[in-house]
Image (cartoon, rainbow, N blue to C red; front, side, top):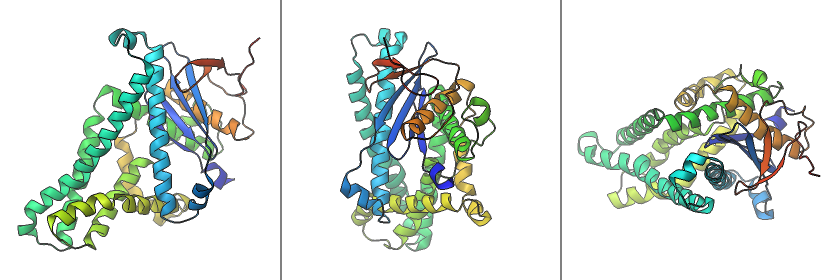
Length: 335
């Protein structure tokens, strides 16, 4: 049962939470009027993809790609909902369709990925390259590059966390962690059941970033210090390999997290999550609970009726209302 409960995870989106299981995904978003809109997506896996899930490293690359694609779709959905249900946003951008917002967000994500490679991989390399004449080309220069990379990551997370909108996203991130903890510990999926749990989780993507930084020092050190062109190419080309290695480490660490040595090794990773989580309010917890509850119901788990105070509506990927949700978690039939 423990293994069944640890296959669920998610991410924060704009005013909401996405939760994912083995065969289903659900994204719940809090509307300005207090209702919760939820969109569900069955997850179909190709035969070749199912085979790759058993191959170390390759399964990590596949999982990270799926996480990226599904995460962006959840973000686009939350943008659709914002445009459709937020009167202030509609007045600010008259004539802007939900699809336009979705296209803009996809473009923004693509640009963000490119900028992230430059900021977190190429910029530290550039600074280290300027200093290599004084530092040398051994392990020291790679440690310096990794330290610069870590400093940029910490500074970036600290700065964006001070903006009100991102702080709310971090609140939903905390709600996602608390809800997953409640499910994994067998506690009720209610605000009261989730509230006491930790904001930190061993499978969090924030901790994954720290592991990527640490692994990059080791992987790049084995390449030595070749010409600048080869150094730049290696930093870009080896990102999938480093990410796949980090995925395997996260996978093992989550499995053996009950062991004290593993918890000690993961302590820095957990500490970093304090920059990307905030204590959620009850509305945030309810939204995360709705998302996880929908996934559990869809995957056949016998869970108690949904216990939230806000009305829940089912919408499509564009945010168009379909039907309300009964307390059992099933869709109500309209007369």
